[in-house]
Image 1: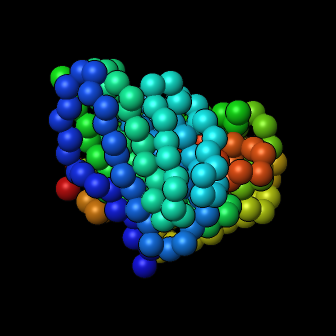
Image 2 (image 1 turned 135 degrees about the vertical axis):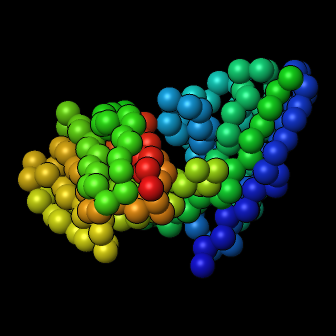
Length: 111
Length: 112
């Protein structure tokens, strides 16, 4: 079975802090994705990566950056956390055009 | 990018009743995927439809892709409490980079 793990289920940070969210997949997938999920807004793509060191902006990249130094690991970075970044963050991976496998999510609260 | 409208936003049914959610696009889709997210869980892939007019079944779930490949539906026959969750459709955002655009989802609640 494909397994996608995220570093934390719950995280509380203060405004202005730098926040790292880590995601690891064990199926050698090329593509990895970061989404945020908010009530009424569904899943919105922040960034995705289609290869090591390759990345593309999604629909809402402002305030975020990403890093993919190894194929199995994709990190989301909040350079200076703000309260409007309080959300559920979901990582996913996929093999080319096929289904996406999601991690359990990280619920981030910025106070 | 690709846009997809999903309706209804919410649906509450009595156990045993049927349920349908719809996804509509103004443009022709190359394919469409369906996901289910249980309360407190993460989205889980259900199925992918590729061909015009395609119909696929998974037990009580029936998935259809429209003839024009602009719409799709997920129908659940005789709902059970285990069907509770949010159902999302997702479409290829376009280009060759395998991004998906998700519908906003339909939250299904089932009264036992």
